[in-house]
Length: 325
Image (tube, rainbow, N blue to C red; front, side, top):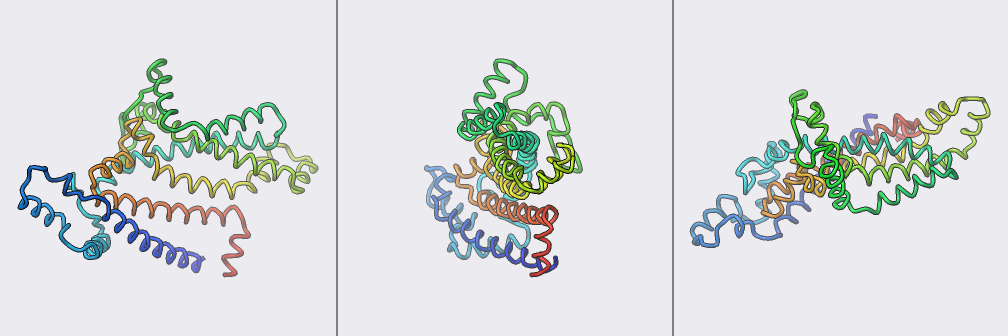
């Protein structure tokens, strides 16, 4: 286990180092933020002052070294637009994005896994065919269109749910969350459903494939022949053996939910990191964009580590291979 942790940490450090180079130099060759930050009527002296203030007069490699030095001290730089630390701006909006991603992931798990298993163990049933056709529809519909339709139906015509904003929040363990208030939960339903629709379809199809294949295996037939109840056969023997690919996909999709919820956050005016990223890109606010991308890389690394740990819990063969290495 110790060798496994050391190997993973070394791989994570290498990934972060490579990504920091790609992200920093990639962002710094796009556009000139001075053109946006300084009025076109400003004279050369004013432009020179702004360039010096933001350190843009230095060579890119020197800016990168200063960036690394700042990261070592927990400083990702100051926003060109807001004048505040980039990390602070992101952390202020991170709880909103995390709770939206968690709500969407929970919907995908609660709906996708049971529905996919049911369709997989009864593949020729009419309900299973409807479920699989619906999963294809979930893949096909554009997220922005679904979001607008959800607002039109449930907020405008029916008036059941609010259409925009995060709603009332409460502090839980020092973190502000809308999941702790009824108003916040009401505001969370539509954006989470919009974000979860594609993930539900993905989980349904993945679970369907695994359940259909596993239901034909000898250990499932033997369990049924022993007279075990269908609930025990499915809930213990079948479910555990199909969960590894599901866990893999759910882990990666949670990272995608954190990183790519921009469309949903924009449609529903959700004050998360995605909305901040779009605004920062439009204003060429380089420190915020770079800090956001580095944090997303770290989030993916943490998620992958958790997925690997879950592998060991679900499949003893993984633990044996780790012990052998």
